[in-house]
Image (cartoon, rainbow, N blue to C red; front, top):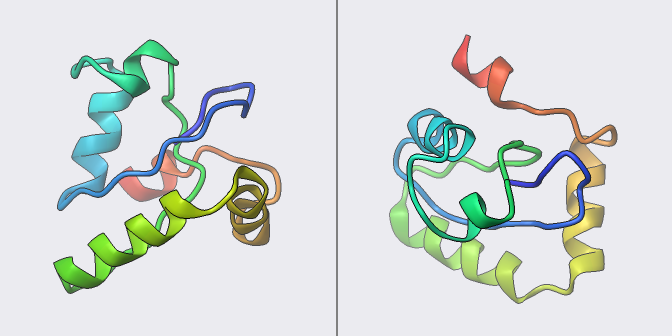
Length: 88
């Protein structure tokens, strides 16, 4: 998740991506994403196995910002909000 200025990044895990992004967009849950207005889904990965997903989340969280930005750019060079494509 990011904001419209692409200045802040958030990495998280969920079992229901569409619902979770909707919650971020509508500021339903207090916390980091609400505080920094992170309401733009710019990258995601889907896994069938929760352990694999958790390990990947930890891996990405440990990366420097530059590497996270490169990952986003590799699949979403314009930083489009991917939520609309997911929810349709």
